Image (cartoon, rainbow, N blue to C red; front, side):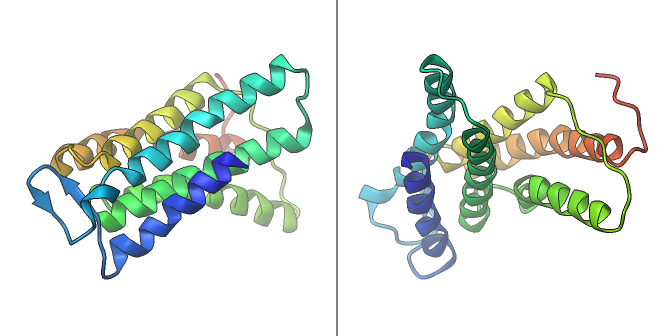
Length: 186
């Protein structure tokens, strides 16, 4: 619930970034006129949502309360955190436009699997992947760095682009495995 509340609060900054208020991004550079007291709010809300990801899984395992529903909600919340965080970052000009592909990759993947299933084409389950976890964590770090108001947007955009390339390449590889075009060798 706390992760969802943090994501909802972060989502409100998408309106500020796109509309009249805007987001102040770096020391000395103001994209638009946001109240200075709110400068850190997007980064803090994103950090809360991202860090609670580690806490909720650990807590569920520790208290022996792991459920399929909890695992599914965790996965969906992870996708939402990246989607909303990346959207705010792109609208604020601190993430490159290509990062929206990172934000939408999971949703495109799930839609593609649904479409293949609906058409009667086979799909394969992807096994857990250390690479996928590392790239997901890097995507979250890139979004957080971009939302921190003292980071130069040129640096955050460059870092995000470096993260986006292997992230999207791995999603492409996973798609080929899930669609049965490639054997999983991981």
